[in-house]
Structure formats: C-alpha cells, structure tokens
Image (cartoon, rainbow over all chains, first blue to last red; front, top):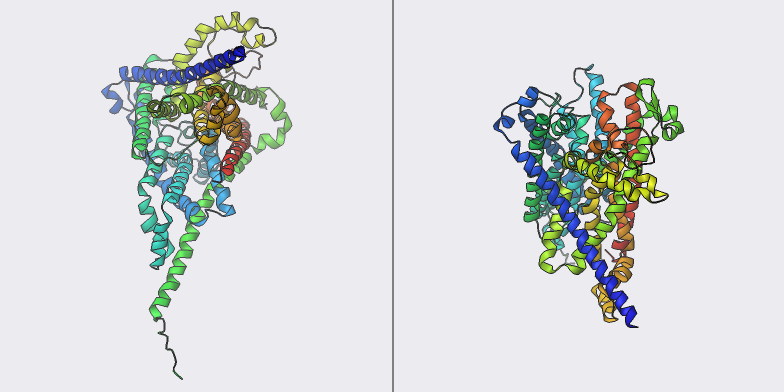
Length: 288
Length: 323
C-alpha cells in the first residue's frame, strides 16, 4: 500500500518539477532574445542612424526607413481603424446573435492568425499588379500598397477589441438612451462608443504594435527604397524590411545597423504592448 | 356623445421619426458593409492567390504538389521540398512547444504562488509581442552558432539510436530544419500556453476540490480532472499554435538555409513555403512568380483549415460553459 503512495508522490514531485522547469525555459528564451537585442543594438547606436539615409550603406543610417515605417504604419491605421471600429460595432450591436454575425466573428478570428506573407501576396495581386498595368509600369510597388497590407494585419485586432469592448457596456445605458427616443445611430456613436472609448483606443494601439513589427507583407508591396521619400506612390523603405535586407548580407557593419534598427523596433513594440497592458489591465481580451 | 379627444401627433415629430429611421437604416448599411469587408479580405486572399498562381496550378496540377524538382532556370516547379519543410519544421515546433506550454500553464494555474502568476504570465506573453524579424536575427546570429556547437554531440548520442538516428546525422552547420523548428517552438510557446492557462482557469473549483478531497495529488488533479475537462480547448490551442508555425516567415527564413534538396536528416538545410516566397519573389519573373503565388495559395488553404479546426475546438468548451 505504502509503495503505491510513494510512487504517486514521486510522480507528482517529478511532474511539478518539470512544469517549473518548462516555465524557466520560457523565461530563459525571453531574457536571452531581449538581452542579445539590447546588447547588439545598443552598441550599434550612433547619431548617423537618425540623420543619414540607407543609400550610404555601411556609412549611412536608417532615417528614410524610420520615416517610411512611421508613414506606412500611420496610413495603415488610417485605413483599418474606421473599418475595424465600424465592423466591430456591427458585430456587437446589430449582429450579436445572428448567423451572419457569428460567421464574421469566426472568420475574423481566423484572419487574426492568418499568415502575413499570404496577405502580402494578396495585396501584390490586387494593388501592385493593377497599378503597374494602369500606369504602364510608372508606378508599381508603392507605400500605399504596403499600407493596405499592414492594414489587413491590424484590421482583425481592432474588430475584435471593438466588438468585445462594446459588449461590456451595460445594457441599461442602451435602454436609457432608447427610452428617450434617441435613434440607434446616435446611441451608438454618442453613448456606446464614448463609453467604450478607452477600450477601442487600446485595440488601435494593439493593432499598431502588431503591424509595426511586420516584415513579410512589406517585401512585395512597399519593396524598399534607398532614398528618402514621403510620396505614397513611390517605393518606400521601412525599418523591418531594411533590417531583413541588412541581416541577409554578410557584412558586420550592415549587420550592426540591422541590430540598431531591431532594438528601435523592439523597444517601440514592447513599449506599446506594456502601455496597453497598463491602460487596460482590468478588462481582458485575448488575442491568440 | 363625449369624444375623448386625442392630441394629434405634431407633424414635425412624425417627420423626425421618419428621418431617424432613414438615418438608422443608412448607418446600419455602412456598418454591415464594413463587417462584410472582413469576409472579403479572407475570400479575396484565397481568390487572388489562386488567380495569381493559376499558370502553375492548372498547368502542372498534381505534378506541382508531388514533384521535388525546383529549377527556375528551366521552369521546373515542384513544391514537395517547401511543403515538406513547412510540415517538418511545424511538427518539430509542436512536439517541443506543446509539453513546455503545458508545463507553463500547469505551473501558472496550480503551483505558482499568487504574487508570481501575474508577472510570469505577462513575461511569457511578451514572447508573443517580439516581432518575428527579431527571432530571425537572433536565430541567425546567436542560435545557429549555438546549434552548430552542440550538433556533434547530437550526432554521437541521438544519431546512434536505431531508426530515428538518421534524423540526427549530419554536418554541424547549425542551419537546418531542426534549428528552424526550435525557433518556431519558442515563437508559438506563448500562444499555446496562454490558451491552456486560460482554459485551465475555467475548470470549476468544485471538481478539483472533490478530487483533492479524495486524496489526489496535484498532478493527478491536473491529468485526470483538468485536462479531460478542457480537452477540446487544449487541442484548439495546439492547432492555433500550429497555424502560427505553418505561416511564419521571418523567423525561419534565415535559419533554414534555403535548399531544395530533400534529405532524411533534420540537421541539413531545407526550405519552407513561406521562406521560399520571401527569398525568391522579388527576383522571380513570369512562371516562377506564378509558382510562388501558387505556394502562397497552398499555405493559405492549409492554415485556413488548421485555424478553422482550432476555432471550432475552442468554441466547444465555451459552449459547455453556456457562454
């Protein structure tokens, strides 16, 4: 009898020990990756990064890539925020229990983890190819196409957050407004969206955090550019795409610039996700 | 006859309610249009990649899937090597990430003291926030040299086991399918573990307490009560991780080695669907480009099915709870 007890106790101790070890493994990889990024990135920091363009290669900087990233991220947000917020509102307020609503919600969850490289190919086929055709090759790859691709990455995040945040608004608020004879669009825009504003804003920031680090969808849409441009119809450099390019070349000076860019982007993305976590530590939505 | 005179509704009120109704209708239409755009994005991605890859998909058909000959110079496109690479690296990632994720979820829900749970789970989820290009750089500059330093040991130990030994035989390049699989495992770890952690928390305390009252150990409660109760959602979480691993590009492109040779060894360089596309698309022309878009279509269809299963399994538990 006691042998059985002993065996069970040993199994238990081993299992619990292994689970602690698993957690330790996860944390070690986190620290390892962050430590390497900070160490390499910090030692490669130099003022030229923020004043010179990538055309100078090893003697140059990243300023055109930084400007390009900011511009494309902003344009992507301008595209996906209105669409995402309105779509999320539709799901929460008009289709919370309809078949159409359920299937859109379901497919939005799939879009949330769809491979980003395929979204890049999609935008290549529907934006880059037709533009090339229409302008006889004068405009092909463009920052606009890059922004559309990034917007597709951010869209499902905003839809989901808006949907969940609006459903957290108490029903009494809706009933009170409707009983005063307020039309539903006014109720939605002036009461519900205001009540859920901080939640929706969190969604937008989370979308930004996700799309700012994306590389794959930019390769065949914005393409890259060694010179400074702000025209959305030009090819445009971005931070992730420049990092990708510089990492693939066996040249220590270019690799160092890539690490500096990697540190910038990691800091930006981690700061955003920490900010949203602090802003929104109570109402939790999961983004798997 | 005394009539009860009802006050007639003022004209402008009636007018107002009519315009309100019209505005509501338009508003609703706009919202519905935006929601349908989400559907259009998914459908469009499938159709556009199918269209872009039509030259190869319809010309070569099954040959495209089954041939391992990939030679852009002679317009030979067989997708077997990238497909095999994607599947093998994703499977390695799952085999490593699932037990570790389970351990993390178990630790965070049953073992860790309360003060530790918040910070540790936040740290693990931070792994998911790191951009994939950073995983790629870390993989190439740090993890590849590390792997090439331990691969001779792998040759001598795992490599000598009968049957599976061939998998671990090879030169210590550091690059290869095994390395890519491990990097992917680290990437999908936070996704699987956070699903597991969340669903483990939904198990009614009464069930667990009953089991403890009968004298179960913590491990027995987790293995015999928590896991069966959450089985469908746990499988859903695993499929969610698989979906991520299949489509991941930047983390694997640098560490795979970009080789179209099919070998038995996991230590040899390989390629995957996403890394082939990323590596070759901008230099490709005509049929080559079409072949790459066709690969994208394949990837999209496979991940779509995997994610569909994942979401369906995750719904099962939610339904059980009446949510």
